Image (cartoon, rainbow, N blue to C red; front, side):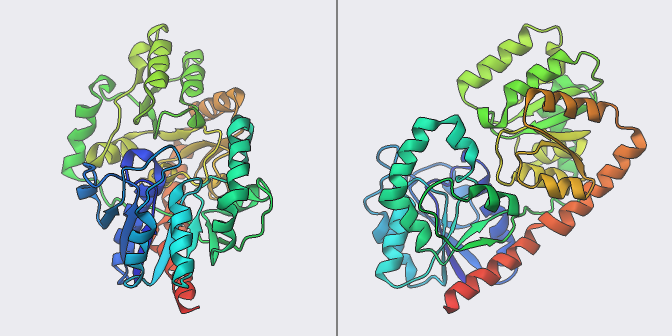
Length: 383
């Protein structure tokens, strides 16, 4: 099977969807499926050669809408050699172009919203929501309405997405999501963490890994940590971020008396990333909204317990499996997460590490989710 995946951007810095596609492409290859991507990226983007699949780059995009005049034609050119078409993400021109090409050639397609129908965006950005509602009436609703299926990564994501925009008549499917198993620790990893974060000096720490974006509440996490002077572990915030947010976090830290206990190493990749997951006492993500959280699954894969808000849509599964703690996505909830972990006994922590690994293997290992995904795409191709 040849899968045509359509993105607005394949830049790894853009977040979880493209990173998940990389993991999934490797798993799909084991089942005889290949991925080809059409995106709005500029053809000379420096990350394209690092991706494990071919990319037809139609950009650079024009305007915030991501308009690429050649995109629909480039998609049509790929349809003849493709068995299934998947549109990733909403609110950009790539979905409109995909729908146009597929309808022209009488081809079915599916859409992954990747959490972009979550009510948090409506509450946080009411003006943007009004603009999105207008775009929904003009184009976006048709993209979802005419899809063979709209795919959600968790039941919670499907539930909260309903009726955020009207009209809302779509064919919903929950197919899950996952990430690859990193396997055992390698020799390369052993020295990577000390090199990436020399200030740790072997002290215990909890890890935040992801974009430093207001949605993920890194500033509130730092504030809660700095208030709790009794915590016996350091805090590592690893990831790229908006310069203004990073500057505010640094100012928070520098004005405290615990500046040596909070570490901002920037983006961790490869061996350094996996070494951080393995070495952390726990992974923490107190987000306002998270449709799945690839980093959560990666932490579980390393047997690392997770401390998350109940706005991460897989929190129910985490609690059911005893793989971590979940509290409301508030300042008080974040304080409670830190306190719960600090007071968890060594025996409980060991049990949670084992539960974290089991949770990953049973629910979030990419090979399992990829089989369900392939089954749906075959169904779509047959029809």
